[in-house]
Image 1: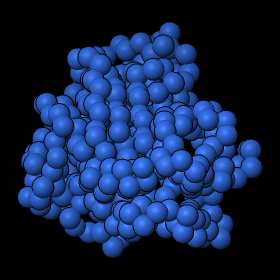
Image 2: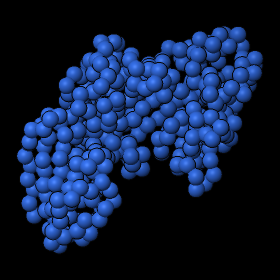
Image 3: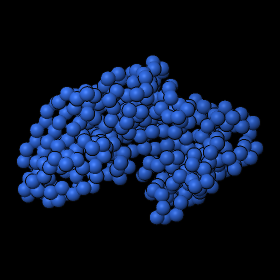
Image 4: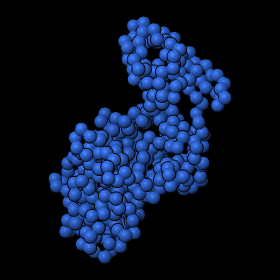
Length: 343
């Protein structure tokens, strides 16, 4: 483990504002280790991800020489100088639009996101996003870490997925929450559960889907299952909660994520032959199944106009106090109407 001989910190004016200059000299007994790990041990108020970004930006020097490789080995007696820029203002503008706040304290805010709301600005969605609303609601307290386009965001939900999402309001919270999401709940700290309405009934009625995911080579807007050794590991646990109706056409599942890949639940269930009702991207081949529904259910599915997926449960350890927090979100009206219409 890195031991520190000296640590100093000063704030120096620069053309772009006040940069904080930090220095550390590694103990003579230090074993060689990665630069980003040494920095993370010395400056534990900054996340490793942010430190890696500062290294790549040329803001770290080793014995006076700029180092841009976070994996560079550093060892005994090395002096590390770190320049930490003043936090950049979030590029998006605040917009005083409705926001459903489930919980808020000085470190974080838990939101119940409605379907149709984009989380952060991107091409085609420059305003009206959750980030715009958060900037107006939280003001200067919102963490700028995570990128100026997505301040405080540690995880996301698809535009048309409703439910619970937690946002960091400062660096300490961002670092603590990011670590829990990076661990994907394997340590037990993080808990995420989704309710999903699917076509057909999975067999077995409960189980685990393990299938690596990557961008589709044929359509870059889609995610696809790939062979072992390719893409990124993705693991979804599911359980049949109920069978709306009596003919086995649909099933309500509770899905728990062990990893958090883009479109993971949607792709995994479609891969198993049970795509989400209303999913325009991964369930198109199942549109004809709607003919097997009763008229009230077909009408409710049309009104849904999106994939039937809801982030119903979210649990994590508070990044400052260590208290376990757990939240539940009821089904939104459109999802609930479809479930009731299915019988």
